[in-house]
Length: 458
Image 1: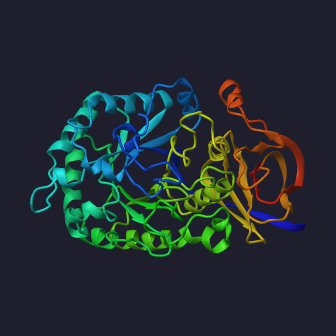
Image 2 (image 1 turned 135 degrees about the vertical axis):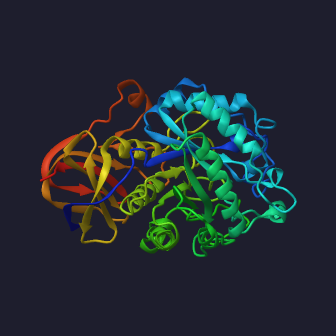
Image 3 (image 1 turned 180 degrees about the vertical axis):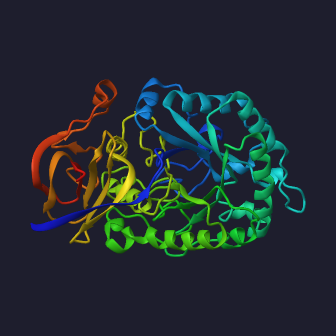
């Protein structure tokens, strides 16, 4: 065990939204009758060969667990959703259920608009009429949709979508039409584009971001993109297969910063007034990697990525997904929270909107600081040990409250708060997470663990 010295600079470096940590529900679970097969032996590679149970928004326990994650956006989208037509094969009843759920949970909504072949003419021009019906209905009902997206991952359409995949110039033209239509209902609506997918090591599979931004005629509200650092075995494309500890390597852990920097350069050149949002992310593309994607190890990656984007002044990061499959924060069948649910709850409880620069003398010890949500005169810091040995943390300030999170193994499904197992019933009934008072300027951080702690903002 070695000593790690920590310093916190009291000068703010960024400021984020109260909905910075946001969530998604895959539209395929709400509307479609086929999805990725969960059979890891027979049909593991088969996409859209499985009929999932229809997502039930009315479950009381789901609502209660979701409430604890507000304020947040809930994003509703999926690539195959670009085959839907409102309100023909996507019914008003389901749209109403989404909005009623969001209202009960205290969420705002990011909702996609169909950009697919069913709403394009023979020259691939986007036709606004069907989307206009949905926006009009939403505005009339005063539903909590705040952000609209045109299409989902339009740069990554493959197989049968290739015949109508549009280029950046065409998509910029579509954007202007959609933007004008949306803003005609309310100037308060925000519009996000182009929800472009980026793969580890290779950038965009079908590049559209630069061409799109070069051809727009107005500043965008939001430039959105998607990032998955690995691919599950389900993915036919494999630039990096998912493994249990691969993303804790420093080079891989820091990769998102490289992509972010490239997007920021494009933003500054072509649309400087825009915000950048990561509107879809998680650890393995194509649903999930069995016995990996819902385990403790990913809390270390998830929390690290959140702060990396917070310090870059991202206003929103959308976690795929709230519930369902093994990358959900909440298991849809048992409604048992995963380790990342508890990590997200702690972030929501402690880390507020002002971001500060923190410095560690060891690369594998990550230290991040915000102002403390419950007392703006204090600081809340997150420290992550991505290494296999325990470390003695030494700070310049006295730590008053400590939330130490550990697990028995990297692939554990259960986590401990200050050596006591965390249970969802305590959150729902008591609505509190108790810290440990230490009043010292040092503490031990076990191997592969993380901790939140509170200090004075002097």
